[in-house]
Length: 199
Ligand code: FES
Image 1 (cartoon, helix red, strand yellow):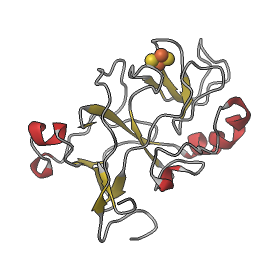
Image 2 (spheres, rainbow, N blue to C red):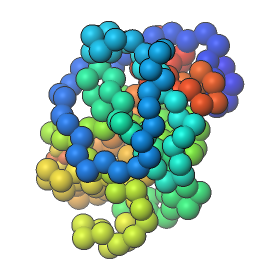
Image 3 (cartoon, rainbow, N blue to C red):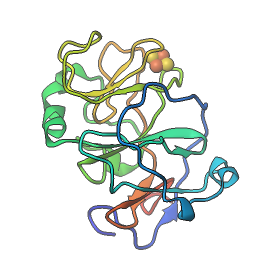
């Protein structure tokens, strides 16, 4: 495997199932699935991997329509350098800035929580009660956080997550958003639901 996660001999790694909740308030570029490569809806619900074309996600935008894997929404965001630089500046405000939680691929345990710094891949569900957080990707003051550096806000009970899915201290959620298993088949084709790291 190359450092950017390009696969050469992957093995399947599946997460446990959880609730299915809709996605509200999503903004960003509209980028289609790699339709001809994707499994059927029935196969996806059963856990088959999903391939998406990330080539047209602009900087600062989220993939849309939102892909689903195992019935769960997946957020794929192309972070700006400004957003990446901001990650280190808010760590004192976070519950688990080093992302030490065990239920995630090992490549999520770093500051960026991703295989490629600019591309963030998250399960789009709040770990509190599984609402789907709203992407608030711009760096600007928000009513819920004057020093907002971009991220995701859960409207259900007010949990806040940064641009790596790390939860802010004081949020009802007690864990960071989950990173699904994923790898890059090519520079522009992201495969969600499989990796070559975990057996
Ligand atoms: S479900 Fe997100 S804060 Fe409660």
